[in-house]
Length: 347
Image 1 (tube, rainbow, N blue to C red):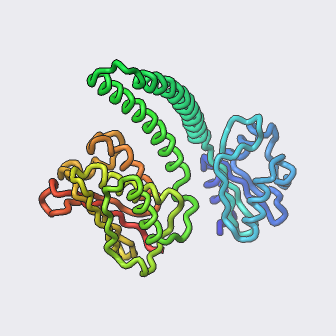
Image 2 (cartoon, one colour):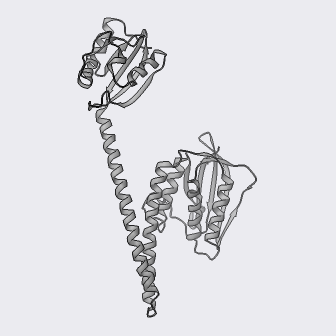
Image 3 (cartoon, rainbow, N blue to C red):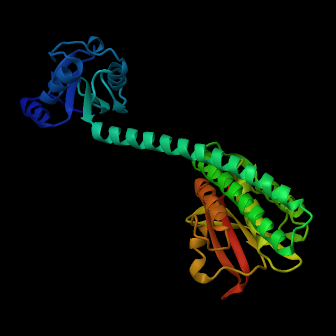
């Protein structure tokens, strides 16, 4: 509750750079400071006066609605408000109860709002160019792939010719995959974690393991936990990007004919909260100690091209309020394989 009685307090209000107006129970002006008078002249083309009704002062109903809520005991805020469309100033408004009415404070936020608008405009323009380039590059890649496939049908190719064509084909495929990853990162950053629902963690792991087995028949994925025990997390459709990508990497970078991958799930208490800790262990070439953190950073190239995908995984885990890290399968010996640990809050 704000008290506005007394000459001393009125002088204090008048020295405040923010625009202040106090209204009574009928939304009529009781008091205003010099900053409010200036705001009315600059943005409304009107002179502020006592007993003027707030409802007739503004075309927009927002200030009157906020003050009405304040009269009922609420403190209400509205950021980036423009009093009139012709006014080029933005204000952050706060309405609060006072001892015999309500007070509205308007703080000029034009510089911040303009900066935000410039950033939004730059972001939209950048996204437009990314979409345009992605579309055109994919079209060029499609044409290039067509010519490569035609050349591969020729009868007079030497082993070296075949090798070069396969490398060119692999490069085009990699370019298309990079475009897909860029689009995926944009969608994940924009939508992941916003509409999560209670999801069966066991079912997620089982489905992703089955998908990887189909794509990599040599992958032997052992689920070393009781699938009958209920385990739930708050997740959305992007959760499959986490475990599918880690499992795919485990199979892809294991040099052995049979790819052994172990999956365990344990309850963990972290900072007083309950988590499910999913541990995916592989027998690949491992990750050096000094690379275990940077492997999740975008475009590091730490693990033979896996960095982009793992950066996507990191973003999703962060959106879910979880944590991810890499450990040695055999402590102190990175060459024996890696354990990726994903901690997700229990639901």
